[in-house]
Length: 334
Ligand SMILES: [Zn+2]
Image (cartoon, rainbow, N blue to C red; front, side):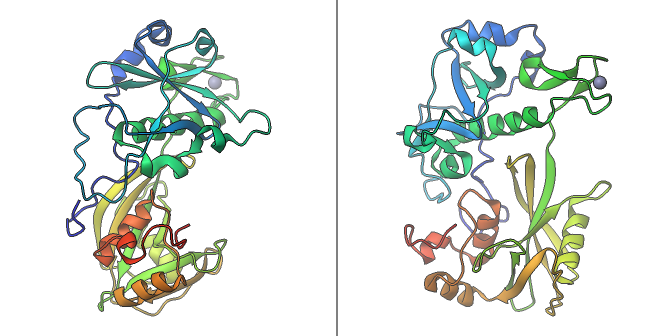
């Protein structure tokens, strides 16, 4: 994508290309049906990891038309896919969807790693580690499977009556065993925003628990009863005491750490005096584009991770990618 576009395209975790075929989930024992079909692809989720292998992903369908200059991803890893095995029927199954050829993808969730082995040695990576290097189909599969696995792990009991719940509808619903109430996967919206002053300077903050030198744009959860735009204004006012004038949508992506979706905005303000909330913020500062480039080159400041919308929001303001300022491998990213 061109960085001059009005919104952020091809965010690393927003590239899902499978058809979710939601109506199929209602079919009785659809997972049993899919796991009995040798043409189904199975992917495993172990804890927060999935297994990857080097190489370009298998051909996938429409909706994966990333342009060649997209710096966010490089397609150098693909998920390990395998045929169904009898033991899969005992696991927590997730019907993740079908590709354009009609091939179904089923996630099987197991919690935790095996023994003392280093999971990364066998190619078991986290989404933060692998997300940038996966092509669209596989990034979408990993993001969806991880979000669902995280939800299942923390919703084993009914929020109405406390009885155990069981997965139904191919892993997309949990039903209370006592009263039959149905509970759906949760996604918690969070806003994240650039704030720019009249001189074009960007507001950067360091969270109270963050290490020295780690700076990002501000972010926070949307509260009940609040619009996204109101949440942007409230978070900026709370964290640095600044009133924003204009709030414009930039893009969004799922963020399953454990269960969010990040909605990105750019905002402007005429106020430059900062009053920091010491509970949330260690420090905050304004930087010009030239200053930011100098801070990157000197290693004084580190950028948010490659799969994050935060990095893309900063690059949107900067007008160029971080990698074009500081070549990859120079150790300034975190
Ligand atoms: Zn209940």
